[in-house]
Length: 403
Ligand code: C5P
Image (cartoon, rainbow, N blue to C red; front, side):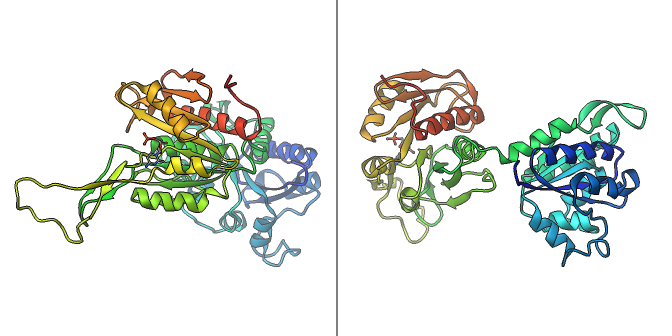
């Protein structure tokens, strides 16, 4: 936390007094702390308390009390490496979710693109209210880190979920934002989804890939601190935020996009289901129904991963093998032919594995023939395993000794 600039926004809940300790702890951890408060918050704790604790002027009013700043909300937003809102009232969550900026605090968060951590605290019924829950969903989907309220005695005399988490926990969540991940400073290219090969302007040849595995890998790599380029064929999923997203259709386009980024990345995880063949001469106009049979001539697509295997300098290369039979044998062969570091093999016909489902049953095959067999697990968890191994390889150590 040393020299990190943390802006704390205090909104009008009784738990505001606990945030004095949060500010104090963050300061002791080495952070520069500034506090902004809503007018209601200033009814609970005097701004002067935060001022004494942080050694910085506390801002409440949009106009007036921030004489040091040229444009107060912009100055505060620019100062922050991260913003923490604690306690966050239901009113604040509603305003933040909908972009309402009617005071200094809500205006400042709109003027910032830095990580936002929100610690809601309120009466149990207010927290459980569908409006509050909807607002939390909106914020979460926008990448805001929401800290779960604790359960226990509440100031209103009831007991339930809605307490502000302990100051230590809040500070730990703020610290985590700045913690270096296993892939911090590394660039990772992930491909996902299935390619689409045009037959005519209307029809195509596709496959059953949903993109879930690749999107989960992209997210896991992001969580590990990597800069991520996600190149995706057909998928209905919304891409994770904070990465470079490239949408492609055909294998040819995917190849171009992958080659464009290859030199600048440290690892490629090729989980896309790339079509092996494309239509030789896609029709310029919609093919009319006439003869009883229709023959399409197909030509082989470039094997992108094999090409990367030939070009590879220091990059870690990971492939996938979705098979329906002789899985380990086929996957092991691909591993060698495509010059990969490891390959993730799965039987796409097994229940709980393969296309469209949220789980997978996979094995990782390493050069030298070692095999790790994983039980059925969510694609998110498998993604973490894959990313861990890539990180170990990039760190120069083998996660799983190959001999
Ligand atoms: O040889 P096969 O297509 O079964 O190999 C699968 C692996 O190779 C996957 O990682 C897939 O993304 C990649 N692949 C590729 N280019 C192709 C076909 C597959 O990079 N044309």
